[in-house]
Length: 311
Image 1 (cartoon, rainbow, N blue to C red):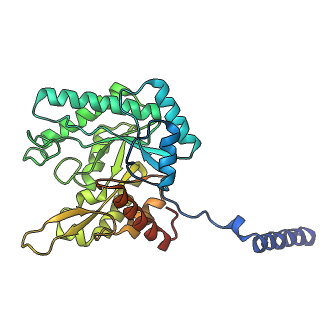
Image 2 (spheres, helix red, strand yellow; image 1 turned 45 degrees about the vertical axis):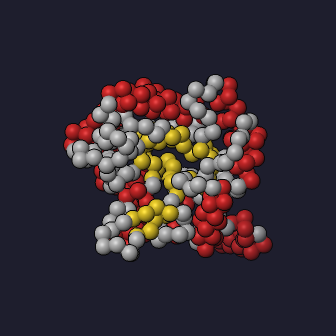
Image 3 (cartoon, rainbow, N blue to C red; image 1 turned 30 degrees about the vertical axis):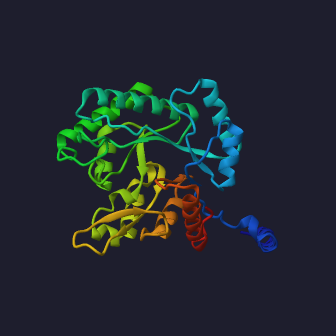
């Protein structure tokens, strides 16, 4: 490098440093963010009312507001309203039991999954989510001795492939929620399902609370959460945010779901890992009142603030 080139480059570097000093925000790394959402209470019978209700709660993510029989034009206007307001439609719930031992129940559940996936694709939700199903003849999502057999695993793979094939989605993904007594019941079984289904539109819905099923995983849930994101991160499309307590007044372990902030779920780890992904939403659920959701959102935002994450 000759003297003239060295001088020019030195002046350029000095100029850049001066700009950085004058306008530090322009050169700062973007603040980590997580989109938060939850159910809405009351009636929201137009896109404008729906968007206003979401914004009033400070939500940047939403559950799908429409049913599977919604007209095409209605789906379009809700989709466009969400996009205009920078609201992500996180998921369409297909809650049903395609593994039911009752053939008619299983058939109707399969059709619901297909219709829900089609709606998710049309409205451009991040995913369609269901449980894999259960052999329990009474409780659609309940435990059963046959839920975690190899035969049931193969059935889950087959049903999942057929649901995706029936829709052939291009803008969304079909996902299964982790469950303590149904496939996928762990991080590794989810990885195994991803490999077995082998379809680029099969992905992950993450609810880590659902696999906190022992005192060990309860007390070590920070490690569990980090392992979820380490192994499943590239496939995660949407998350649920809940909390959990371990009752200490009985001699057998009893783990009980509760409002975020009332349990021992490590939300610092959860939000930190989630903020590293590409705009994956976090959806609260299972609370009874609007006030309870506001309290939960307040807690999650406070943890985000402590960790430098914009919720």
